[in-house]
Image (cartoon, rainbow over all chains, first blue to last red; front, side):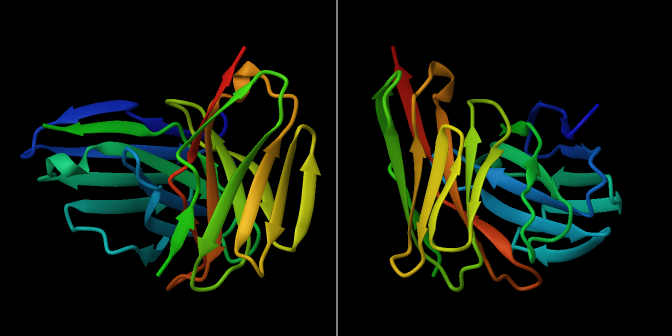
Length: 115
Length: 112
């Protein structure tokens, strides 16, 4: 596999469920990101990790819990979500943090529906 | 506050030229990106501008004017496969690091 992969591609969950989204990058990058893309809204940055350390939490509710066990993997743990959390969740990676010019490579996203 | 404006939708004909505008008002500016996103797919990088002027890359060009808070993406010799959303994103200082602030995207439809 090359680039940034995400699993699952589609997820339907109830408000009381617990699920996890997985992202894996095969690019040797040091920084990874979670974004939320809702219909007719801009991409919203949720979390930023650099060398497995969280460097930014963009005021995201605690029902979203990120985990970065190593520089190649990033998880987003979900629990007690709300219907308004239904969106496309995109993972991205870059060589280093966006403090220098580093384009971000995006995964295909997980389409999440909360019922 | 942070604000990035792009037209919601545009249409054009195959073989034509189209210009997608982006205006921004952000707390700080460290560069501007354009991404292309086909329906159901990941955004892919098109261009990056940090200095004023025009950057050309094949059929695609991107222009930046920092004093006007303005950029545009120019697509020449349009092809059907150019039908996609085009996202404008500004790199701005954040709490821990610079971050990308995205516009809502411009959905371009190319007709035969």
